Length: 123
Image (tube, rainbow, N blue to C red):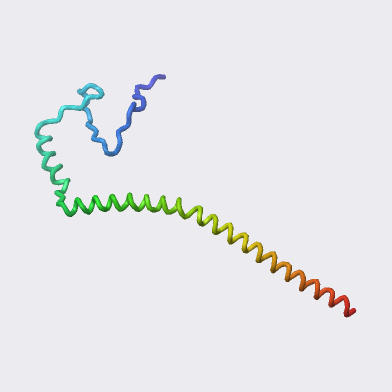
């Protein structure tokens, strides 16, 4: 049983790539000839699809792109700078809390032993 289905494509175009579709008469890999009327009709449509940008709109787009890049770089560098400082602070806090907890536990044990000794003496 042989199938006449073609295999997978050798190359898949990206979403930003213009792909020309060939007609059945055109050899594989070559685009089909486009009628002149279709080309002329497509040109005004393409011009209408791309709005004209003035200097202020272009500046806004550039600034927006730069702002995104700056935000990403600042966040990355801030994380890199703050992470070690937070680790040191966390370690110091843990040490301090352990010391405080040990002191509190000693006080609680001393009080509990004193109460227990007091109960035994009363008997």
